[in-house]
Length: 234
Image (cartoon, rainbow, N blue to C red; front, side, top):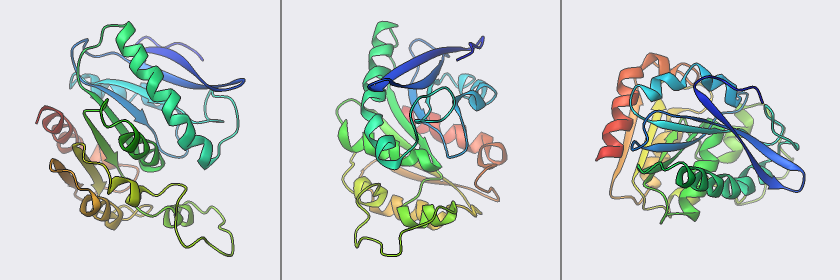
């Protein structure tokens, strides 16, 4: 994995002969550190140009790929994506400790990555300050249809592989949900449903007006980062 001036490359072993490519972008030794799972069709290096926006807010960002993405080994599957969240998170905590980062630890997932963030929120509540869900999906089968992924003719009665709606209903961590008003891939109703299902006392739904799935950050940059910074500090 090529190095970049503002990032530290990290390879995380997740299986025999399989490692996941990650990149840590430093901002502030005492600031919040976010483990970030990106969307489908993106790779870690895409964030070389986006991360300075986070750094300007004092946010450290640890961006993780999936199997078969970027410089990661293996082949992408839904079950592997969920399973790999645990070794990635544990390596993330180890990395922070070794390098003396002392701020709050958050987990964030965008679009497809919302499944990884919500999975960790349900498994490591004692180690996470809170979760951030950007353009997240509530119902897995709706997401797969939106992405054009063929579905079996007979679907199971319950969506148990990646059930964001079910999992978030068990997470009491502070929860921030950010969604575009005009998202044509994962409609806003998904964000609303996740918000309603969350039992967290400290939860917030932020809707970016006039934004779509892939321009949410650019259209609502000020609102987006104000929401994250205020939420982490709140």
